Image 1 (tube, rainbow, N blue to C red):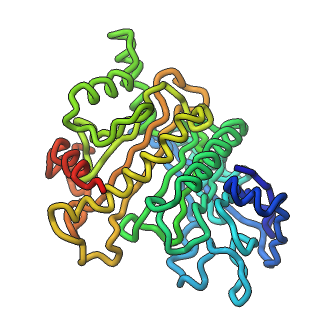
Image 2 (image 1 turned 90 degrees about the vertical axis):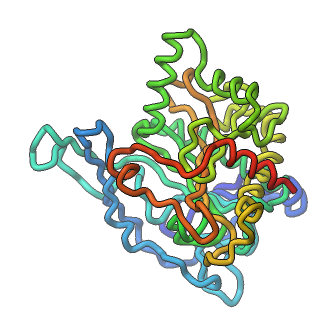
Length: 379
């Protein structure tokens, strides 16, 4: 993998990540200029503290006007080629590209000044949402999907995630880096080109905070690592294991919440992508797409092809949880949480009163059945 930095017309950073074969064939990449006349990005995101939950809520009103499902010939993530208007990526061809989001929820220099408290009341602290949001384009092919990328390209994406994790973690004020992919209209995706995002948060997110609390209590009580104990127990039981490699295991968690959910966990306690060794990356580049392909076939194995959805491939969220930059790095490790909102062909799992209102989850199937169907979806 080779990395080439560039600048966009409005000053945002952009990085080209080339597969080894591409780098060998083209030599040194010379990034073309971004010829668009773009105004400076204006962000007004703020964070308000919810005293009832102890969580920060980000208010990003400027995102209301972001690009929404443009036609393919106006896709801002496709390469800039003759006969079409310039996109966010000036090059006519690329392998993997990462750039600063034009409509970020968090920014390094928010264009807003806010008083330290809402209504001058110390009950509600607030501050600018200082962080960073990046877009990761997995391929220049508009109609591709991560599950079907060649292994060489998956390795380039992994290298890009590692590169960005290390660089974002070194930025002042960043507490957690979260790479993720939202896929499918039902998830709320606004651009259909295969891409993901990376959020660099100025706080430790609620789910991670909960995990650190549980892991800390487990260590105090047993002296052991919670995620290691979970991994060892899932592998020993075997009933929920989907893929068991030399360095990674994919399993459906014993208390899975979603209609389809799987975790992909490294056997070694590595905090983030930057800490993976070559062997771990090589196996991950094989197992991760395999897991995604099983998810694509999940609903075909028992219910027949999904012909009712606007997109036959199931919607999913693939979130790569990494250890926080400073807090509790010895209590957790890098791991994937992959889940889908679809519970049956053409039917979604809605978070109704119990889940949305009080956070008490009720699921319609068993984790063991989910795991068996994912195993059956091998091909």
